[in-house]
Image 1 (cartoon, rainbow, N blue to C red):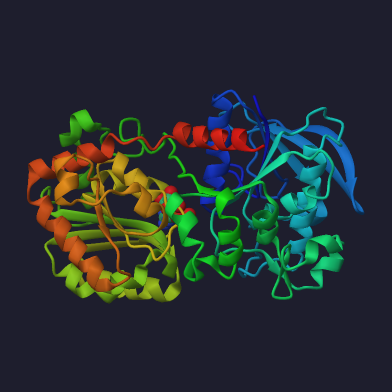
Image 2 (image 1 turned 45 degrees about the vertical axis):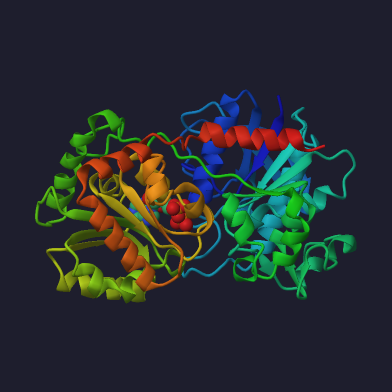
Length: 477
Ligand code: ADP
């Protein structure tokens, strides 16, 4: 049994701004179920959504700050969570990283450096709780200083650094090095220095024993100039220690048990799926039609997700015999342009701007296909949810999408592995052609049902991902 300290800046349902929060609760739970002694550690933000009891554990100092270590449980699990309580840095309500105007807090470097140092005190068993980590599993730039700082310690635990999105690097002015009192040995171009700045993510990439990212293809993608953001050279250098492990999906996203949909169903009762389609059409004021090809999209409306590719061919797309349902929010220009199409095609398109968990579930259950034309995608969740709902994903061949969706081709139809539709080129034309391919196949119900069956019987469980992390922990010498 390994003692694993899982260090993260967010964990669902305590605090969430993105997919990192989902991984940070699901993976520790799955590791605990595999018999591991896993503890979570995160800052005690003012905005934490705490339902379980919180107990005081110990008090210690980091630099001039007094830290209280608090302890609670992750809701609906036995996983223990340690909270780093330092009100002057984490006490404010609201988003953990940015203020009400979306600007990063000016002292983010100090805040997360303190978090890293406090986590190290816990990992090294220096806070009177009689627990020393074997593995410190760090996530994203907020925890990147941990492998760097631990490399300066004797008898330190082994470290794993997981990159959930290379686009966020924790870059700070070079002056930060002295503010944070970082040892000079760490400041070379082989270390934290990045073009005269300090890069927190480099601390993880340069110093961790093992580096992971959330899909095998994204592990390759980030070794290219397009998606390496200037760190592709270092990633290529560390290539032997870099692997990709696909995230799992939670059982909340299972049409057999989903309480948020109109009619539960499974691969054995696939005809029941259509009840969700008519419920979705009714709810969104679209013409109720069981046979129309219904396309769903749930996404942050940002360039990463390829929204502009859709907009570039939207008129042609909407001239096909289809309906399209979009749920999302984000870039104001994308929202405006989507709204114009929604106004022009009220019988074919529904646009819901905002965040709506229950509508998201109904779209997954009610649509025939799910559109995800991302420019890059570290892992992606919706294409996996979609497959478990028998809603075939149409995706661009990038990152986790390339790893989890098997294109419908003569050979994959024949060997019953096809689960969706994949296109390679980052263009509206390629997207449109692929939608047309799916529309055509949808007119063959027997073939379509086989694709749905292939998709719904795949294993996207957290258990299989957690087993791969465990193998990785055990492989570190
Ligand atoms: P990313 O983390 O890059 O946004 P993922 O596919 O990994 O993309 O995860 C996105 C998650 O957020 C999914 O669970 C998706 O259903 C959910 N989501 C995104 N936008 C919305 C929305 N407007 N309403 C409800 N859920 C949303």
